[in-house]
Image (cartoon, rainbow, N blue to C red; front, side):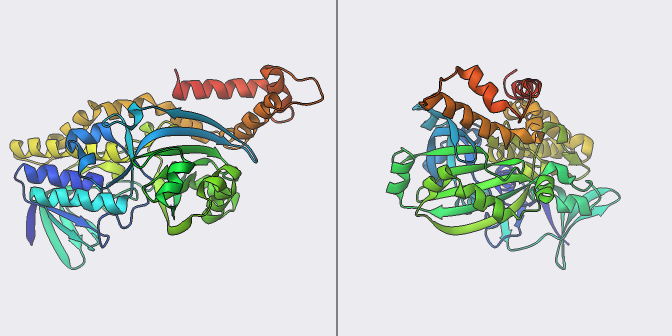
Length: 429
């Protein structure tokens, strides 16, 4: 049986980074990717937050295939016919390493994989890992078709599904309540149209986080500007989608039909459509990260920060890969790869700032359980502002009066107060 020091399953940000770090340390590393090329099966939006990534790939924005530096963030509530937005713009917001970059994973992942190969890792693509090899409760390698390949330790960076861990009896099945579905289109538009429409220049762009206009299904939408396209999509809870009886493409079509979104994507050509399940990644859903002969990194470990305003996964994946690699090197020095010797990975990860952010915003997860956030409040915000900004022949009212009128028959003041407290606990207090 062919053998390596380390086998990495998956060549996404976590897998490629782990492979690079371990190869740089002199280990014999094999990275196995099931897609024909890294990134070909990924559905990420996506935004790459640069501070944590720059610690691993210094000044990566000068070399990596990034799209635009995000200089503007809009948080938007979509009512049936209205939109209410918080528009944040800053010169520093577009300056690395303080900013986020829009990226297309079909371009970024091959670049990351190349960094691993240049460090000395071996990469094979288009190969599906069918199972983890387990002997006496210890992972000892992988099964890929007829081939068995051994390793001292396996890095599981296979993505959200975590099928290998479940097949090996190392993780239970997903609870549908904790899983969302992401549906995305890449819509081609000329760069000058994007720059005029989103008020940016040739290097900068904008990111929109949108709540509402998902047919009452719990979830939200996003729009990210790329160099010559937009990444447009929705992420909705699986159980809420099932209860609605609607198809995923219907939710996306309804989202795109909203007047604001329709204006932003007008004239574009859909050049890519994709859908994929996404684990919601709440802090309380943290999974087992180590075992005898294996570690888990990236989205396979459910490492996702969602505070409603931002969704961070790629930088968390890269950070987790670095800490996993360091733990493997420490275990190698100790001469064994047991759960105990690899356990330093967990302690190292807990010491990172991004893990602290994950814990800080743990209560934001509960906001996604509140259906009023996705239907009532976007309409309510639009109705209140419409009352305040529209001149009428009838006497007007102050904001509190306008809110009271808009609330009639929809929600009580008690419900509103409880929801505001929940929002404060999740995002403010």
